[in-house]
Image (cartoon, rainbow, N blue to C red; front, side):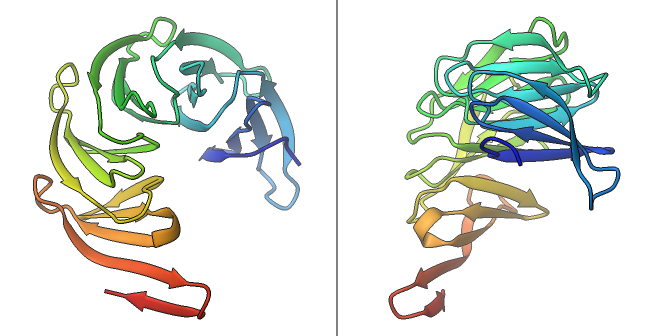
Length: 220
């Protein structure tokens, strides 16, 4: 039982939990039938977590990006911090960069070559509220709330540019990329599947609407 678990990342024998106002909680899952908390670090309001190497990267809402040294999971310590100008809602790490879905501030790209001294190197204002980000290859895929899916070319992290967009009818809150498809959690609109073979021209594959009043499922 944690305080307010909002996101989780598994690495090795540990689960790292973004626990809202309780910060980062680290759980030993060596025996999945008997998980136990072994570490904790209080942050402002942890919304999302990404683990890479010996560090956990926390999207910490108004507090921006918090980088935690988890070399010893029983004694996590803050290694670095960067105040973003928006609300850090999600974080994805790829190579030497952390990509932040920064709510009304859009996409923020942070150089984490030195985790103790992160620095902002790129920014792109999206039209909606960037609530989730997934990086695949040279592109970042943004769940941009009412604005749907936004695809950003990050070949040059210092100069990101929007190359594709698809209005998803709902409120895009999460995105996962696998192969040639992006899967979007679109709030009341359910699951939206998008063909991203050509990132500059994303195409709707399936739009699943749930009509709870009638108990019907519709796909187009």
